[in-house]
Each structure stands twice: as structure tokens, then as C-alpha cells.
Image 1 (cartoon, one colour):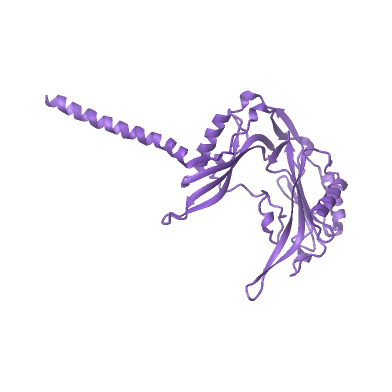
Image 2 (cartoon, one colour):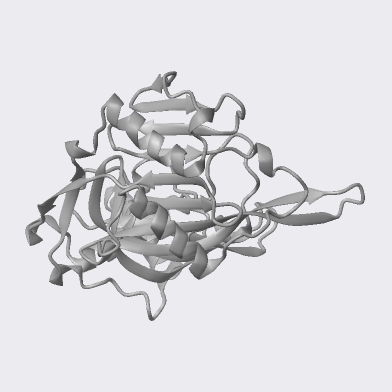
Length: 351
């Protein structure tokens, strides 16, 4: 009789333990449903109705030394800066070649001989005064002269449907006086072009950015426009939309473990580009609510985005595969130079 009683007690203890253990294992799924919320307009695009491709950078993008020198001479001639650069003297770092201006350390030419990327900046030495640059072109006038420069350099065909006007903005310089009052001076106008493949935006590397000074003078240019080879994707290589949605929820939760609420506002079909490869993906745009601190539970709202692959076996590295995603790198119109003026607010984010 005693053994039977002890057996029942032991069975009860085991049953209670199993119940609470199962409840704890299933709890994260309940939390996900409560925390990650899709707004009414945030639906998974019907990407399975489209013919999609992957892209790999072509060997035709590569340049030899004579091609590099020829391209740089053309750009520097348009800028009126050819005599200020020593093109016979370069520094190499992997696939990148660097050419410096002998009179202005903030000026530089950078060429990636593998992808054909070119960045040429004529420097900020003459633009550091406390005054705005005179006769800056704006909007339509700036776009018109930017197109002229790109055509003269034979970089683009204006009938190319992959070329999309992205943004027209400016580079500003802020100065604080002895009274700690700030003054903002307009220094350059920027014109940016983005890329589309198959009428789908390319999110990542590809861009043209032209920086214009007085009267539309070409001050700097970034050409990141590799030649790509395409490979068609079969539907068997894609995850179904329901699986993509579940993966989005899981990755948002994994990267934002302290979030109290994640609101998905948009899910857009894009081509994601990185390190010479392009794959179709979903660009997820969210707002995240986090406690202000460990001791202050006041919720703060932050913008956040995520790129989710739709390939079953993606070859590219996505942000959630490495360290926790903090923020999508801004595609700034600011040219990376040693002592460049600070960019205005409209230049810090592409969107």
C-alpha cells in the first residue's frame, strides 16, 4: 500500500514537471505572435508570380592599368583637376587602387579594378570657408547637367530602363560661433541614380552619385555600376510566402530580444546586392518599441529594417546570419573624403 501511494505521488510530480516544461517550451511562439505585428498594408509580395534571377558580377567589369588611367583622365579632365593628380603613383590594397592629390589631402581617386568602381573627389580645400557656394544648381538643372556628365563619360545610356533617378539633395557644412550659435552653409548639390533589374529595385551597392559645385562644376563622382551575368531561378528554389513570413518573424525576434513590440509597416520585393552577387529578397521596414533602459520601462520607438532571402539556399550573407542587425547602412549621398563638410539631413538616408 505504501509503495502504491509513493508511486502515485511520484507520478504526480513528474506530470506537473512535464506540464510546466511543455508550457515553457511553447511560450516563445505565443510571445512572437504578441510582439511582431503586421500592419494591414504589410503583405508578402506575390513574388512566385514573377520570373526572377540571381546575378553574378561579370569579368567584363574588370579593368587593367591602361583602362584605369584612361577613365581617370576623362573624369579629371571634366573636373579641371588632371594636373593635380599623380596617376603614375598609386597605392594598392587588394583590388583597390588609390591616387592622391599632391595639393589637397582631402582629394582622392579610388578604383576597384575587379568591379570597375570609380570614386573621384577633387577635395574640400577650397570649400571650407564660412560661406555657401555661389550659383549652386538645384533639382531639374542639376539633374540635366549630371546626365550630361554621365553621357560624356560614356557611363550610361539614358534609355537604359535599369537606371532610375534616386535623389537630388545637398551637402552642407555646419559652423558654431563663439556664442555657440550654429550656421549652415550649402556647399554642394548631389544627384543620385539607383538601379533596377526586372523592374525590381536593387538594394545595395549599385549607384551613381555626382556632386556639383558652383554653376554645376563637377566636384566628385561615384560610379558603382558593375556588369552582371544573370541566372534564372526555378520556383523550386524559392521558399513559399508563408515560410518567408515565419522566417521574418523569427529573425526580427532574434535580433531584437528586448523589443516589446515590432510593427511591420512594409514588405517590398527587392534585389539584394552585396560583394558581387545579387539575389531576390524581401525588404522589411518596421518600427520597434524598446524600453528606454533597464530601470526605465518608458517605451522608445525606432525605425528598423531587415532583408530576408526568398531563396531556399541563399549564397549571400544576410545581416541576421552574423552579428545582430542594428540598422541598414545608409546609402548616403556624402562622398567619403578626409575632411568633407557634414552632410545635411536629407543626405543621411536614401529613403
